Image (cartoon, rainbow, N blue to C red; front, top):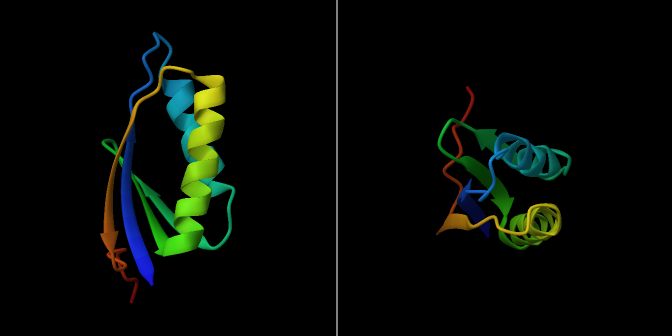
Length: 85
């Protein structure tokens, strides 16, 4: 089953951009998922188990480097990624 996940990270730090960029870079380092980023959130698409495994790993790493960093996620079964013709 495929999944679409929308994630927003809100580091509670003065220098928040490096933490957010690090999280996005970590997601993009993984093959097998599609990552799309905009100004408000990051969307991740792919196989349910693989997406959740990768998101969990990347969130854990983010929490280790930025201890106070809440995440907000929306998860939908199905792939809503933009299709390229």
